[in-house]
Structure formats: C-alpha cells, structure tokens
Length: 507
Image 1 (cartoon, rainbow, N blue to C red):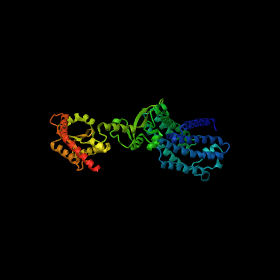
Image 2 (image 1 turned 135 degrees about the vertical axis):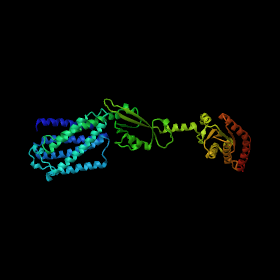
Image 3 (image 1 turned 60 degrees about the vertical axis):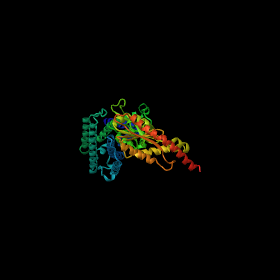
C-alpha cells in the first residue's frame, strides 16, 4: 500500500479513535448512547480498512471477507448516524423504529456474508481475489445499487433536516460549523461517492473518508453542546450547595441532559424528556410553586414542591443552560396554611374568630350602610363543664355553632364570629327588622328541647345599625339586649338543669 494512503488512514484512524476515547469516560451518560454506538462502529470500520490493506498481501481470502464486513460497517454506520442526529435534535427513535433499523442491518449482514455463494452484492468470490486492486474493482450488483440508493436517500433527508435544525439554532455560538461549508461538503461527498460506485473506483473509499470526518464533526457538535451541562451536573459548587435531593439540568433547546434519580423515580421522568414534559409529569403529582403567598390552596393532599429556576453559562462554553431545583416543602406549606387559617378562623367551630372581625370592621363600615347584629351567649357553659366534663362542653359549643350556620344558610352577606368562649355574634349585611327577627327565631327554635340537659339555653340580643352609626355602637346595643335577657334566662336554666340532672342521675 502506498505510503501516502497509509498516512491518510493514520490521520483518519486518529479522528475515529478520539471520539471513542472521550465518550468512554461518560459511558453511563444516557444522552451519549446513540453517539457512542455511532463513533464506535466508525472506529471499527477504520480498523477493518487498515487491517484489510495490511492482510491482503498474506491472505486474499481473509482480506475479501474483511472487505465484505466493511459493507456491513457502512450500513450500520449510516443507520447509527441517522439515529444520532435524531437524538441530537431531541427526537429519539421509538422502539419500533429501532427494531426495524436493526432488522435491516441483520438482513443486509446475512446477504453480504453469503456473497461468496450468491454474488448478490458484488460479482466476485474469494478465490477471484489476487491483490488489493481486485478488491477495489469488484463489480457491484443491482441489489447493492438499490441498497446504496436507500442509504443515500435516508442520509440526504436526515442531513437536510439537521441543516435546517442548525439554522434554527444560529443564535447559539456553539454551532460554529459554517452552514455553507457543511452543505457543500455533504454535496461533494455524495457526488464523489456516486463517481466511486458507478464510474471510477478510488483507492480509498470516499464513503469511509467522509463518514469518519462527519462522525468527528457530529461528535464535536454534541460533545461540546452537552459537555458544559455534564460539568455543571457534576459540580459540587453549582449543584450540591444549592439542592437537597431533586433537580434536573436542561440544555439551550430545553432538552433534559441530567436528572436526579429521586426525581426520575418519583415522577417517572424519562431520560429524553423535554423541560415541558418533565414539568408536566411533576405537576400531575405535586403542586409546584415559587411564591408561597401566591398559593391559594395550602391544604391539598398532594406534596408541595418549591422550585428554583436558574439560567447558567458553563465556563469556557458559549451556551446557556437551565437548572431546576425542587424542594419538598409539604410540611412547611401546610403549617403556613394552618397558621393562616387560625389567623381568621376559630379552629373548634370553623367560624370566624374575633381577630378576623376586628380586621374587617373598617371594610364592613364602608360596604354596608345598613347592617344587623345578632349577639348570643350560651347559658351555663361552666355548669355543663362541671357536670359533664370539658369535652362535653366543647361539643355543646360546636352544636351551637352548627345551629347558627344552619339558621343563616339561606341568607347572603352573613358572617358568624366566635367572639370568645361561649359568645357568638352574627353579622347580617343589608339587614332589616324582618330578616333579623327571622334569623333570631330560627336560632331560638333550634336550641329548644324539653329535656333541660339537652337544651342549649342562650341569651340573645339584636340591633340594626342606624345611618352613619359606628359598628361598635350597634354591637353595644345588641349586647345590652342580650344581658337583659341573660339575667333571667341564666338563673332559670341553672335551676332547671340541676333539678333535671339529679332526677336522672341520682335516683
């Protein structure tokens, strides 16, 4: 073999070996899987080419079969190239397409390896080979032409798609391969290969030369694009100092390049997911937020994930990536929700508390020109606690609050407030005497029972705000009426309660 061609093969071998060596360091990195297979087959093809030229002087039969293996290698290379390009563009092969591609490789391999019997690929047998030139000048058969046309058509379509994809990414300085050079190189490769296969046979297969160069360019594109994100993903100062357990890193095309195992397992996120797909999966099973004040519901059964989104530029790389960190803050959010609830509501009864009412008074004064107040007080709560225990006393308060809710459920602009202990007030917006009296009678009716031990004895007072009268004045009027009623009702209830208790429990 001429020394000139051996030098070219040496350079090509170096170009083919470098991607294999670099990518081996990241053999567990899923996005490089297709690229690793592609450059691996290209390197294997290179080894076969060199071995063929070295062995032909010693065994033409072995060189013949090594040459046939080259046909299998080029087919595998092109199909893996297509798969790699689709991965690069964020559109990985489905399982069905993968199965179809490898079935095609398997069938073609069987045809090639039996060529010595069938001559379906080239019109030559192992016994016909006497020198390297016999290998180079073998007459190709129609099946080989059809096969080559299919591969050329697929390659051309994929390269055009890749070219368009690179144009769309022109904003990124990462893709520095000039588009006109890229297009011209591809066109030149197709033309030279056509001449080589159908008109004039070159000593070195131009398909092989072009594939090695193309594999190195594609490796450079993908490796350089993803390498910055790998460094970020593995960098303690960038990730570990900022996260607890869940994160993912995305590239400038919103394709996820790394994801914590905790996040994958919990939300079933695939290795090839986009940012949108990953976030959608997470939001199906969790509530994602970045501002707790904007959360309307803090009582959901779903976990709450606080998220931080950071854009970063890896050092020495002209690309931008996205880092998403997720913190499980379920307990904290529910605690905040509980505190917010207790700030406005009475925990025992579920009605408003006095703090809420005091904060709302000014707004009530502005909103309603006429409003009514119904003040109530449960008689004998201490007596009830002494005889039946505090748990029974709490149940009594809850029963009474439910009576207030039911008595006012058909009216609008109602606010029930537990003012403290056994005292409740009902605020009635846009009130009149008929409305106030109807609610009062409904409350009194619901509290009655012939058994004093089951009766809820109350004192009640009502008032309607006069024009421009202060809210506190209206409440004072209702309280005065309540206390007048309580003076008599409380003593009467106490006597009846004690008498009924002794009759029922001290027989």
